[in-house]
Image 1 (cartoon, rainbow over the protein chains, first blue to last red):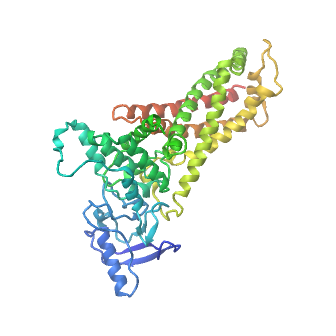
Image 2: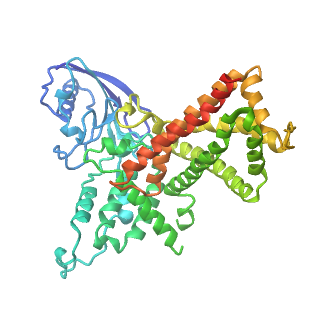
Image 3: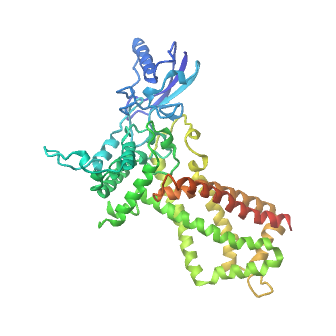
Length: 250
Length: 227
């Protein structure tokens, strides 16, 4: 396959950035999108040019590191996949492919297509955990009965890989799908319920501090999410936050 | 943190948007019920005027009307604040986006639709509400303020009546699209999302979004054709 790539180049956080055009030849349709980027980078290095910075790690759809806004969609065309799971056979010979970084004030560009998503880490650190004593007297997990449906829904929420496609896709750069998944995975389980009220307030507060936009329920995040996190989680977060705020003494 | 949780936070904006939006939706039904009397023509003019008199003087309705004005203002201001913050959240736009791949047109254009609706409300209130409350009004045979004649003149005999009707219909289309997304969205914002009930809520919201504005729009069209 021969392709024309229009890729965002930005030297650093302060650089204004611009789209640049790169032709690539003889791309194998069975390559992943990231492998195609590797081929382009090898070509650039051989030409003595600066290779394109992009995030990647496990390359098997688990880590959530690969990003890229490809042809107008987070992780490109195709549903329930990350960019490493996107194959070049999804495109046609001669196509022009537009590649941009996640665009959000809360995800500043580090270089080219690589963005700083540590805002998610800070939201997680604000309350996305369960405070338990693990110093040798850990209780068997099965000692606390959990209804199967609750366990399933908690697990579904916990499949969020924190890639940020929801933020990238949302026209408001809202992080509510991510935050709601993290709130839900604990709120649905007895171990997490203990700190549920405090948790949702802390995490939402951190989300607002980080400068993410407000959710307007377009539902785009749910469609583009590589692991299919449901909007039901946002509704759950809304409920949790409402009751936590109404009942708090502060 | 606590001070702003129910006023300033991102979720608070959703709650208020939803609550005021739902209240305004209920108002639409009450408003429509009165307007439908207009379809009775001259024969029911006095009934319509009696209804209009009741709506402007009955104390309970008066209290609700102040709540209504506040809701419209709050809904609009909340919307403006949302839009400003959301624009700030994405300072650099995408060069190429395919939003139709993942979301509906109405859901992405609520601010635009809301602006049309707000402009319409201002014009609509200037034309009828202001005149009824503070302006010179003709008096009907029963000695009531003759709002029927004012409405009929506006939509039939005025030289720009066709334009009035057309603008009214455009505004109703905007309200329809606004409700198409807004009504079901309000439930989601308030945390009502359930595998069994949400599809029903969505369906009812969409039927509401088509039927209510359509019935509103039929009235001036009917009056214009039947003049």
